[in-house]
Length: 117
Length: 242
Image (cartoon, rainbow over all chains, first blue to last red; front, side, top):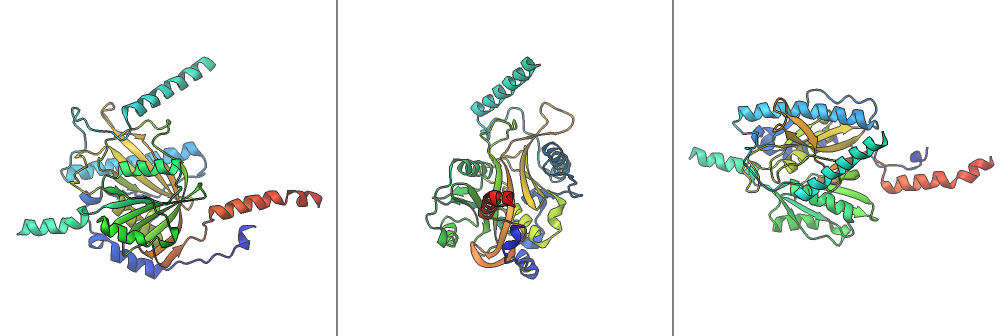
């Protein structure tokens, strides 16, 4: 009821957005997949309660997994290697130090649960 | 000659750079988020903080000087409210989001990891195709987040995926690791982070300016949420009286 006090200036310029979209799309949207690596899911997400963390994350996970398999197929078709060679080492996003911290955190959490049981 | 033409054609996909910048007073949490995104986007360039919020359109010129064609601005107000601006400069469009529910890479609950600079797969929920403003946002996100093929800092393997979902009127961002080294059969996903929820506020026609093409009717600014909250508390005694 409080929100209704505030008059909002709402704009939805569909024609303007359409022409903008046409303007800034690269080669009118016909970008080869190898340049974007983007896929869109076949079906929209079906989540009953968005605030239910567990079910939401499961739904996110499942949908992403479908797309990943799709992407791997497309990679094979376009001649891109997906898997890293086991002897290929390079800098990671998270440092070893950080990964070690995460591991010890999980272990201590496990221990805590075990002792409480 | 044909090959040369092909190369020229490809350059529109591969020649891109994203300028990252923030306003002053960004605060540690959002600074970390920005650092995370910079390390995940190899074709990025960090620029000094901006002093004056009133002249955001100057970012277009900075982009030109630094040969960037996209820009991401973290605009943090009052030390708490983070607004994320994503733009194709200088011709637009620009999308302004309000960022909430941020988890950075430095937090401990997400166990995934990936190579620095490996090109991400991009996953979009089908809902993005349903409305024009979402299509526009999807296109902009695709152009900004996809690492160009053959970029110097990129790796020739794929080990993570950026996911964008449209739920509850907001865009949810997730980043998963794809691992099959240990689990030979199917690829398994582990979340790497960061996490964030992007609430669409407005879409502008140009780079950091121009006319408003879309303003979200369901968006409530954090200032208004706070004042609503305060008001509901303030009337406690009046309500009790009657």
